Amino acid sequence: MSATPSRTLPEARQWLREHLAQRKNPFNAIGHDAAARHIETLPGLDPETWAGHWLAGAEDFAARAAKAEENGDREDALENWWQAYQFAFLGRFPSPLHPAKLAAYHRAVEYFGKVSALEQTRVQHVEVPFAGRAGEGDVLRFFVARPPGEVTRPPVVMMWGGIDVWKEESYARGRPLRERGFATLHLDMPGVGQSPLHAGPDAERQWDPVFAWLRDQEDLDADRVAALGLSFGGYWAMKLAHTHRDRLAAAVNWGGGVHLTFQPDWQERSRQASSYLMDLMPARARLFGGTTFEDYVAHCPGLSLLDQGVLDLPSCPLLLVNGKDDRQNASADIHLALEHGSPKTARVFPGGHMGEGPVLPTVTNWLAEHLS
Image (cartoon, rainbow, N blue to C red):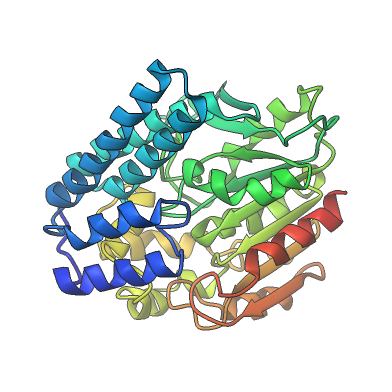
């Protein structure tokens, strides 16, 4: 489908400038100067124009990367493949709701493969069978990045993002954890990327083959595994903390919903959240295989952990963090969660969705305490 842009082109450029200056999503790890030039020359917001503009930049970097590889310059090739991937990711941002954006997504996955092949620390791409139902996929894809140096049987932090930040994007966020001696495992949450199933009340079954795979890895410590979900993905970390508590040493819900977020009145209030550039509701609806606000609202109440009875179950050690002024996911869900189940750790930061300030260091330190 082709969603109507929610901003004018000048408004979108200003949103992009501000997010680039503050290194906010989708500009967490892109080259500043090249991104700034492409913002100023962005010709339009319709999916074909948007995808084509960013993908042209990606292809320029890909050509430089291929040339560097021919010349035997690994570092230059790695940096250019990294930028090629970042620009292709922007081409599909926030979600491949149009064939042009889907093509950009496939290119981003391809370029990320080039990045991971050249990284100094090992990145292992994995495919395992998935026992899907009718209409679901039969393969689950993820990748694992080892920490630098000689680390024997490191603990593992499983990471995933939300409706627009997928496993390839979570790789950069995992760098501080790898520097602390942890391996990071990256996969897509249900309904996005290469996940084999849509979101739903029991989609946490997607993680069962991941835990089974980890138990078979002699060089990874399957007894020290944590779940870190970002944005909407924090919901799945929260659920796994209860449903798979015997397999997790810790879990972090960073900005995800619990119950209030999934109610129709919140969705009505958040459908034009200023923290989002475009296509928030179509991207959300895609989690369930839909395309409209009505599709999303019809399905999302079924995710409520309160109504499912999950919140009152015991959990592994659980950290909840968010920005107090989040307009995408209700920060009040943190307070609700504290009224149920096992005791939890919580931190509310200034700012909007996912918070501002030392959020990532706070999360990293908390995970280190529970995995070391």
